[in-house]
Length: 106
Image (cartoon, rainbow, N blue to C red; front, top):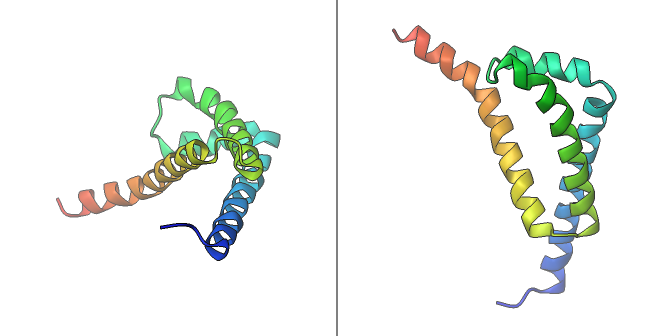
């Protein structure tokens, strides 16, 4: 089914909104990597030795991917990467709740 100009416009708006969200979200993490590392460490999902590496790598990945999505470079691949990062973030948020739930049912 061919894309209409209306659907192309909607996709562009969504792409730009997602790009902006990731660019904005990366900025504070880049400016304050130590604070971001402490946040990552509190989740207790990574070995402590990996926390500083992830705290430095992740925000720059979000920024570069957001800019690439904004300008339309490899938009599908970058969209897939950002979808994966979002799923990992959601899993990190849900993990402590799941642990609490499983502990309370014992």
